[in-house]
Image 1 (cartoon, rainbow over the protein chains, first blue to last red):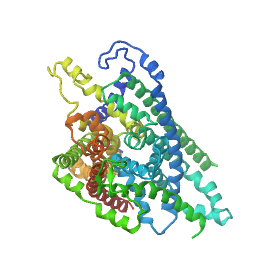
Image 2 (tube, each protein chain N blue to C red):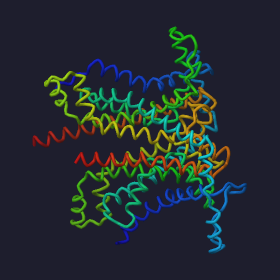
Image 3 (cartoon, rainbow over the protein chains, first blue to last red):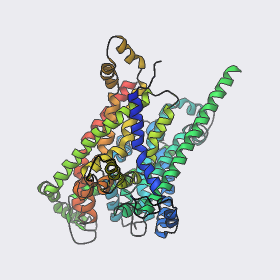
Image 4 (cartoon, chains in turn yellow, blue):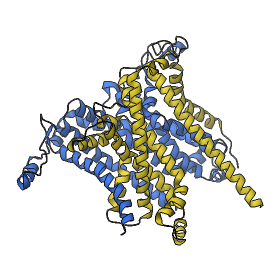
Length: 272
Length: 298
């Protein structure tokens, strides 16, 4: 096969990835800048990291964000997986069209509308706004993403495996636990990760649904950067970017190794 | 219908009804209410304690005043139009940046592709807010880009990019780029290379083979990518707020101000309802395009 990259391909890839990564690289470099003036380089320093770890409001906000993200993504994974099974396996039932509409609509709904509508609901039923209401809001939109990820996996695997388990005397729950769950597990895990990052990332919906008692990290960052660039935010961003980069790269290495192992086993199986 | 099946359906169903459908109906209802100085700041409020008379009274007080107001005040329709315009221009710009990248990725050697794919997806997992913020230090008047260009001697005066619509285009292109690259790459990757070679063998130039074979094959990906950028860009709030300054008018920002600064909940709700009505058209077109692709794929 004739697959040679032309100079045009190489140039567009180089420029494209430079465009994607240079701003973040600059952010990381300037987080080690000694000067408070973020556009003037004044030597290497880690003082902004030290200040960040002594900034109590920031640490509080980070803790709130983590609590919301862990609880909402776990709940969203359970609800989203249930919704995916309903969509793919339950066949027809009354109200199915409405159900699939409610799964897909939040994916394209602008954040400002989702946030506004949930806030109006919480006020109408007199719920105190804070960590709990942000968690409810995040669960609702993340479960739709989880259900899309899981249902695409459910659609590709053979339904007869579950039926075989049922025929062999497994209860529906056992068949789910022993057959279905192991097969869809990678999708469930990536659904959880997606829900977790969506929750970490959300500014608009959290701003609408929170009360005076809870501030999340994105809200804190947003109010700080509205006034302009700040070195402390650069330090925080660097930490967040590194966590994500390490997570994504190690996840892809693990899955790559799993594929290699699988191939080797297949080859050995073929020989035997 | 057995109990297990019932519970499996009912739990996610009721959750979505309670936290998606009902809130949305509340928005529609409040959009027909009037602002009032009370808590909650609108009338009428719904109460069943007054019986039938209360319900009748409730409906008689609903009005379309907010929607009439939206058409009368220049601010709102200008904001809707400028949101559509900014979203459309940014979508075209994103396509121009994304297509060569997706094409390069699809032609790269097989063993490079997973890495290139990961490099495209990685920014998507990092905070949206941080990615928008990262441009603030670069494009401001004393920013690195201006320092660099003035040092090179290309410009004598700093370029004003920050707080203009150019900054918003840049922000949208930057943050939504993966959404455009991935569907185009998916379409190009499936393409059989021998088609292009056949065209060249039959006497087409490389350019016309690209134009007549590759581009039409990638059309489904291009259309999907354009919708994936255009639809969310219309309701964008963070990018115009951080990069666009007070000069850029976008409807997400108007809704936010109406709600948080002016505390006019009914008007904010009617802004939201009209925004949704505008979004329904591209969303339906997108859905139809996806269905058509799925059927073609089978």
